[in-house]
Amino acid sequence: MEVVEVKSRAPTMTEEELSIISQFYVENYNVFHAAFAGSSRQPAVKAKRDKLEELARILTSAGYPKRTVTQLN
Image (cartoon, rainbow, N blue to C red):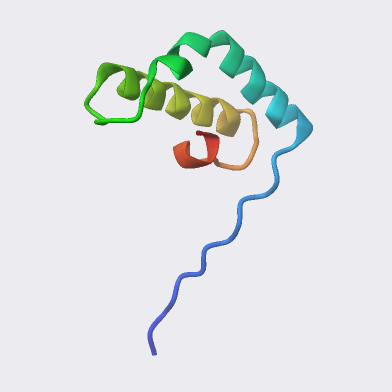
């Protein structure tokens, strides 16, 4: 019998978690709005991804459920 891994949905973001995300977004507004759709090798796209990874680490270290870059984007 084959084992099938079932992915569970991430819990809904709390008001406190959304507040942290909003504050981070405001502090890094220029980074998030400098990235245009295109190659992931472009510096602006890489900088945005790096900031999203940093935000994911901040949320996890604060005790919130692990979030992916895709969920935060």
